[in-house]
Image (cartoon, rainbow, N blue to C red; front, side, top):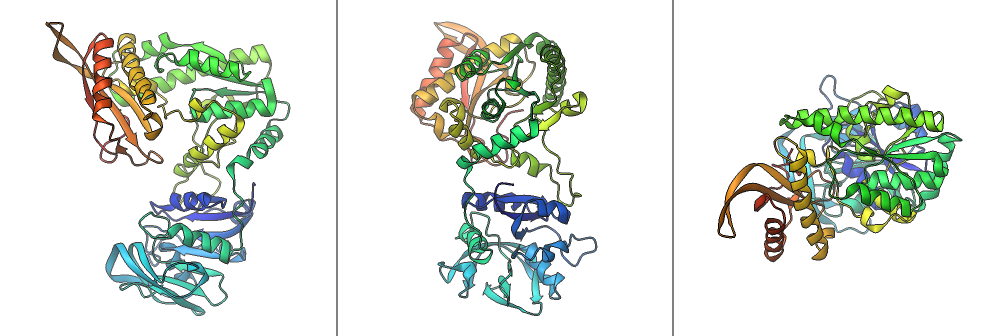
Amino acid sequence: MFVKSVLVLDFGSQYTRLIVRRLRDKGYYAVLLPHSVSEDVAREYDPGAVILSGGPNSVYEEGAPQMPEWVLSLSVPVLGICYGLQLIAHTLGGQVQKAPHREYGRARLHVDNDRLFEGLPREFDVWMSHGDRVERLPEGFFSIAHTSDAPYAAIRNTEGTMYGVQFHPEVAHTQYGSEILADFVSNVAGLQPTWKVDNLVDVLIDEVRQQVGDGKVILGLSGGVDSSTLALLLHKAIGDRVIPIFVDTGLMRKNESAEVRSAFENLGIHIHMVDASEEFFRALKGVTDPEEKRKRIGHTFIDVFTREAERLKKEHGDIEFLAQGTLYPDVIESSVHGGPSRTIKTHHNVGGLPEKLGFKLVEPFRYLFKDEVREIARALGLPEYLVKRHPFPGPGLAVRILGEVTPERVKLLQEADAIFIEELKRWNLYDSVWQAFAVLLPVQSVGVMGDERTYENAVVLRAVVSTDGMTADWARLPYDFLDHVSRRIVGEVRGINRVAYDITSKPPGTIEWE
């Protein structure tokens, strides 16, 4: 493990991931584990503090998740948030019951002088979301903050080793929330903010070398920031014993294959290129259902990757390892509330391959968020245009082409999309949006070009701002810019005569159209 950690136990709150995010932003290494994780696994992370998350249950209900006994045996400071506070009170002999009315939304917190609120105002707004409340504190506990509806909005024990807050410090609606979390970790637990991603490169390289030894590794390279950073890290660690495989599905962005090959050749990394576009188009022939598209693309990818892996084994000898750019959100999302320990299922980017081929997984980024991977990428010297590249869906342009996917329709979309991205960069707008792309619709519309009637395709431009893709708002791009891009697309892409702009946020819409 990198440094002493803060264990965040998941009791099912929709905000739990934000606790980890806020602490890492402050320089503390936090990990999220299911509340049912065993003590042996928990101790592997060298915990210096434990945080109990919120959750949807009532502590007094039959079958409600309880605080693991080992939390107290660790002898480290504990902070309970919302349900976590109620768990502390319930477990140690206090009383929790339904509140007279549900407290939801902003509330005014009145605080006493305590190191949990060091340097903060005596009153500020917090975010409440609870239907139960503590009616009687356990022996040895006292209140350190209250609201008009919650007399025990924050509590602590006499020893100063256990704290609880009824509100959610991890959400942006709580003023000074990140500072409260940091005060607990620093002032109460005594941990230092030593989590710095750019110092991890040597640690990650050593981890790879220890795991792989003298073995060989294959990697599915997509050209995105995660797999590109992973390829470069592995090359730094084990040199030519990593073999990146780039599968051209025919569903890539314009000139993608050539650009990826050129970028990695300049880095001294040889890529095994596979043109499987005909196979993918055969698999997609006549298919219009979005889910069926994804399934066929996934199955075809596994077939192609399996075939190439077997071929490489014959050429290079036994290949024992498969590297994947699994990120921490993938681990979190598959760590279901209430699940048993040791079943934190990692997200396999090329699902089914480890089981199918018997590979051992190499996942150096399994504890990192995407922005942390970008910092690693910069430290490794990955070209900036790859570091800043917008996310691209695994099924490629197939989920941006509504209706049947054909080579001709892919070509149309590639050209329109390339103009959109080119102009975003030219107008210095590319880095201000989280993701941008064009969508080809399964409709044609009437137009007039050169005094002639046209009946051609319509495209929609999509650009969103976001921090993590979980929610997103449509980007307010300048009208002059949109006008310029529309004129270029209609004028230069034969077969498209209408351009629209998507102003739907997520929710209710999704970022991708399929």
